[in-house]
Image 1: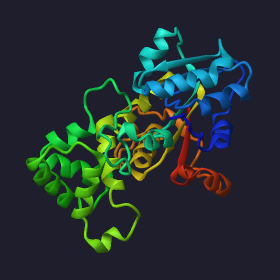
Image 2: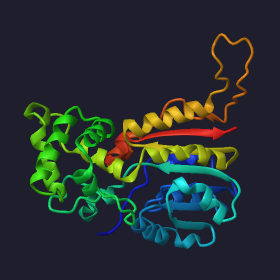
Image 3: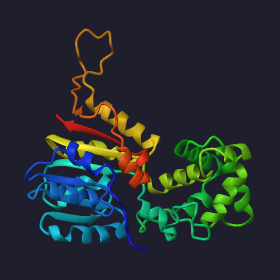
Image 4: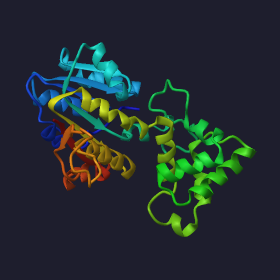
Length: 310
């Protein structure tokens, strides 16, 4: 299957990253290289470190950026390892960073990757890094009922999480659950008919939850502090999220980094010594223009937040 992935809100990302001549930029979720290419076009002297944990995305990204040899490094790794990545390249500080979170349309549409509830007879996989051992099949068949309930409730924001977790346990006691279609069947039977008629495919939230668990997507956001640390003064971080859980974490982290004194309100003199590390460039998240949404439905749920290191 041919790799295809449109960069979301590319114009807005380029504008708010404020690309500088001779700047070094870290694209932590490079995918097909769309955003990285736009950075390199924006400044003919800029350098990009394009990172992705999916080797298939990395191979495609190398093709996308091959004309920028000498200015683009494409690396198969997780952005959480930014310290080690920059050290290996003998880079001390960077001028900007981008995280385009979530899953690409190509990964969803490639049924062999097992991300989609439409994949029917394809194996439950959902790994972005296919070298890791934890798969969706492992989660569904080896996590206990309480773990499954928590994941589906918290990561999928699914109000019928308890029913789904209970029915997964019942089904796997008879036969191991190995396909996307079988999991979708269990989810469908766990949700009342009235609720199934609302909010699209009833499997969407549970599949999202399992994917987040498999790939540690929310835990990975703890690396935002490391990315901020790697920025030069005046350098910017842009983060694109696609669901409320991601956006809430990103918003909270940026707000925390932008906060100064954290002493109790009645403390007469600051004794904490806490100083803000960033300023918020976007007070509210930026969303895609209607024209882009019409051309790329994935952009409809996207939110862009940007901060600048002090």
